[in-house]
Each structure stands twice: as C-alpha cells, then as structure tokens.
Length: 436
Ligand code: 5AD
Ligand code: SF4
Image (cartoon, rainbow, N blue to C red; front, side, top):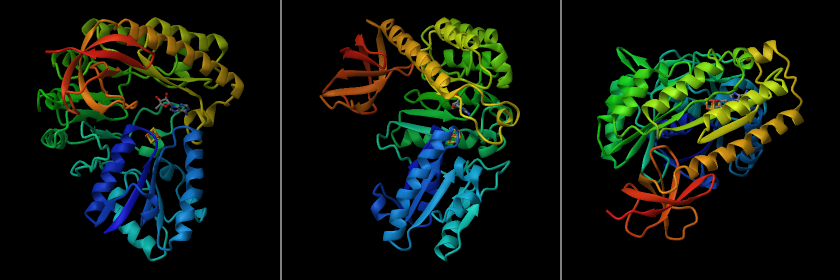
C-alpha cells in the first residue's frame, strides 16, 4: 500500500475536505500515515483567508522539499484554497507536483498518476454541482466522539474583504438524504455529536428542505446524537432555525454569529448587508428563545478607513452582547477581493495590532464574566476524553460549547455526564461530577 500524509490548515470545512480526500484515495490503495518521513504522497490542504495563513504554507513547502529530495518518487501536493488562488504559480516554484482546488478532489487519482510520470498535475476547476455528497469521509479525529458533516459548499455572499467566494466558488447545497444518511452512519460507528458545516448554513436549501428542516431531520436521527452547526450569517439566521433549536433537546444551544464590526459604515463597506441594530435584534431573539445559548463571533479590526471611533463601536457592541468567546483578526488585504480593488488598506499595521490587542483584552474579560455566570450551574456534558493535563481529569463541552474539566475515574469518551461548575478561567469551566 502507498502511504498518504496530509496536513490541514484553516477552517473545519478543510478538516472535513481532508477526510473526503482520504476516502477518495483509500479506494486507490492509499493508506493514511501520520509520519511524513514514510509518506509516498505529501499534501497540504491550505487556507487563504489571511496572508499569514499563506505564509505558513510557503515555509512548509521548503520542509516538504527535503523529503522530495531525499526520497525520489515522493510527490508533494497543494490542495484547497491556496491551490485555487495561486494555481500554476505554485507549480512554478518547482517544489510542487500536484495542485488541486477544493472541487477537484475526485480528480486526485489521475493527478497523482500524471505527476508520477513526471508531469505536474493541476486541476483548479470550480464546480456548480460538486458536494462530495456520496463520499463517506475517513474520520481523522481519533476520539470517535464528534464528526463534521459538510452540508453545503462555496459562498454567494461576496463580503468585500473575503477571498472565500473566489477560492471555493458558488454556493451549492448537498442532497439532504446523503446528509441524514451520513449522520446515521456516524451514530452506527459510535459518534455522539455531529457539526453541520457550511460557509453560510442559513442559506441551505435542497428541494423543499431549508436549514431549519434539515436541523430537525438530523436531530431526529437519534436522541443520543448532539447536533451543532457553523457558520451562521446574521442577515440570514431565521426565526424558524431559532425555534427549531429551542424545540429539540439534542440540538446544542450554541451559535457562531460573526459580526465583523460594530459600526454601520464599516459593515456597509464590508458588504455584510445588516446593521448593528439588526445584529443586536438577532441576538435578542436568540436569547429570548434560548437564554442559555452560547454566542460566539468573529471580528476584523483595521478594515480600510476604519477610524478610532468606528473601532470603538466594535468594542461597545462586544460589551453590549457579552460574547462567550470570539475570534478576532487584523484586516489582511486579499488580492482580487472587492476591498482590495476599491479601497486602500490604509490603517497602519501598528494601529491594527493595538486595536486587536484592546479587543482581545476586552473579550478575555467578557469570557471570564460569562463563565462566572455559570458558577454553581449543572450541565450535561458529552465526555470527549482525558483532559490535556492528564491528571485523572476528563473534559467535554456543555451544550453552549464551553469546555468543562472534572475529576472522574468512572466515565469514558462518548458518555453523557452531569457536572456542576465550581470555578472557572476565561477558557474553561472547572467542575465536579454530579452523582446520579
Ligand atoms: N482579513 C482578516 N480576517 C478575515 N476574515 C475573513 N477574511 C478576512 C480578511 N481578509 C475573518 C472573518 C471571518 C473569519 C473566518 O475570518 O472574521 O469570519
Ligand atoms: Fe481558509 Fe476560508 Fe478556505 Fe476555510 S474556506 S480554508 S477559512 S480560506
């Protein structure tokens, strides 16, 4: 058997794509290895979302080259968003044998064959139909507790800063029947949690099944299966989705709702197509239906022409919502996007970084406050396994997505347990087991 090694960068969707690639190539006699030194084929499944994500890959390419030199016949491939964005520029480096965009993975066996005969293989054709719906991913997470299921691909939103519509193409939804079947397979294999993935899950639509209906269908697969999803778009998250979440005990009360900015002029310039007021209205609606719902967000600081005052609006929105957690980024100009073509990247790097640090500090306090509000509460947690510290503690998440740790010698991964919160940091709830 030939050995295949894949490094995965970027979002959860990329992790799931890597699982699809393992599945496609398993049929061709490729076995997965985690040891790069014994690999016949080395792939990096890449991300283009910010410049630093791409810079990291350039560094890895030099490292991969050492194996290409020391073991003749070893092939190096770049998959995913960076492959799509840079195309033959990657082949021009002379360090890459295969370049495959996100919709070209069925073509990998042919690309590998081509490259083995000495001709670099490239396929960066984007598809309007490809969803890999019929492929059962080979799960790479060893825990066997939680699995990703992609429900759609691509994105039609064209936020002005974002490269994704260019690297992942137009939005298309996967047949709901294959999604439900995959959820059933997960249950049969012992998984206890699935996360439904899409760039904008709220615009899922296949035949007459919208995202709310899909959520209900997946939740009905088994009461033992927890259902999560990501990512929601504030302009699209519907009352029907919120009501469906509230109505099914196994749909976790957790929503990742990227706000990007708290200022209306910047939101308009980002082409987000909602206002601060609309966003706050959605949060209010979620909390009204599910007071215990975990709400997290993404934000970008230093977007083109953002003033100090406009940045303060992001700080005040964070305070007003009191997010449970957040991912925060400096704006990174991406070639070809609307923003790169139309607006100068004119906030100096040191100003961006100062704003970012200020926002991160605020969020750390908000996360701590959010966790303190949970002191003494009892949660049902799905055990993921031993905690990282490895001192007789287990870890797992509550419904809102918060990481809990507690001392426990009775349970194992995939069990549901009740824990009470005794103490917390900004990142973790420190708990005790509640005997039943
Ligand atoms: N610069 C910085 N952050 C970005 N994101 C997307 N594009 C950019 C960019 N050009 C962030 C957004 C998005 C998250 C996945 O990455 O916050 O929600
Ligand atoms: Fe990165 Fe976005 Fe591509 Fe995911 S979709 S790998 S976050 S650029």
